[in-house]
Image (tube, rainbow, N blue to C red; front, side, top):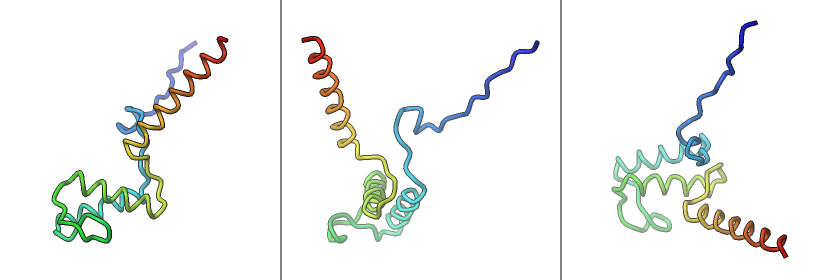
Length: 101
């Protein structure tokens, strides 16, 4: 009797680290923001009243922000995710202390 090997699926690097992956709609928004940055028309601030964006990271952040506003599936901001993790950890601790008494 031959042993069968389990088929393992390769996960994307974004999921290996435990981070959620953005949707394709969000990716298109980020691509658009990157193109506008290269062209020199991407601006920061409300209504594009701020300065010209030259930073790659800022262009990505603007693209993701635009995607969030349009309702695309985008992982939460790092700060928000950190806050949520902290809150759930605090809840778990309070539950464990309650069950002891």
